[in-house]
Image (cartoon, rainbow, N blue to C red; front, side, top):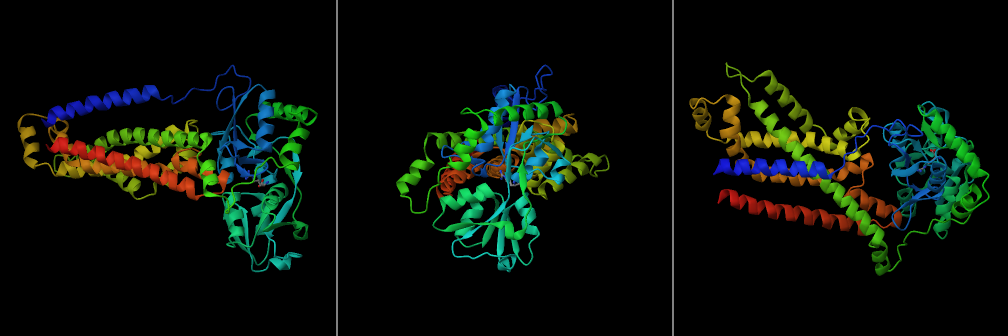
Length: 499
Ligand code: ARG
């Protein structure tokens, strides 16, 4: 009975893996050498940005990345004959993503000497300076007025560098500008340092509560925005500069001046929802067609990563468990058993997020497919837990079974595979299912490596609406329903097995 179930299970697994592998296009294609420019994906300009910085890059009310820089880089890509693909990530991750994950950065990035060591900069497309944004009632006339105050900035920016030169202030760093603004409004911080146009954009939206102060009293230096490009792609940079020059001189609707007019002077960025907005309007803004598309896309990514990682984890877990149980003739643990124990210990003793980041930025840094990186990271992680679960299951199998196997002339591996493992597996089913559910929940951190999963979709939507409640509650319900459905399914399987 158990053996029949076991072989059915193996057949099912094989079919599942093949269908999934065929169905998903893990494009590991090398760059086409005939393409015009050497880019990460042939024919595509992959652009990194941090879409929390209106009017240059932000998520618009449809949940799409929009803004001055986005339109500019799209126009440049069009001119040089490439398609444009935007990747939204943390500002602080942009520089390390260049060459591996993105070709260029279009993110209102100030050209600095420090950054020029790792990237090449295009010609300048805008000049700016740092401003202060604070609540209406606060007077800031000289540097001393800042004494004892908490100053907010975005991590990794020149604003943050500027803030670090201030004396007697407390610094607080954020990932999203929208979070800084809401913390000023909620009085969690006293003021923030933003680039001029972004300070003005937020100042305009919250003109009843916030004010913008020119920070010239603090002697910050003027800054210039450029597109950052890989140092290895000189030709691409030359082409970008040529296109930029043409766009600057184009008086038409796709030219530079038209963009300045639309995004910077007239502020195309629409005000996000306000606290006083009626609930029905909030609902509408949260569940329009675009947002639902975003949730579905995120949900599919979450499922894809979970299922593939679970399969990988399960298969590797079996191997690890068997290896960990191997003994030499004297009945001592083999070297292989020790190595697999060490692997299991390290994986279980470190956060999965750290493992994911190591995979993404170090071990698989040159892998273009972030989903694949996540699958591998979570698969390797889950394998360690699966191995421990299986080991428990196997240990619970009566020792007589192993002896019987040996008496029948089976080798150790054969005894394991045909006699012990099937029974051990049966013992382990409930725990394995729990592992699957944990895995599904743990994938919520993949947003860190610029993947749009369910959690990231909610985050992105709240960046657009400034309304964290509805997106968060939506994904909570979705996660809960999914795990509930899985556990119901598991219950049925368990009953079948035991019956
Ligand atoms: N210009 C500043 C810098 O280069 C801030 C840019 C922030 N941009 C963004 N998209 N978040 O550091």
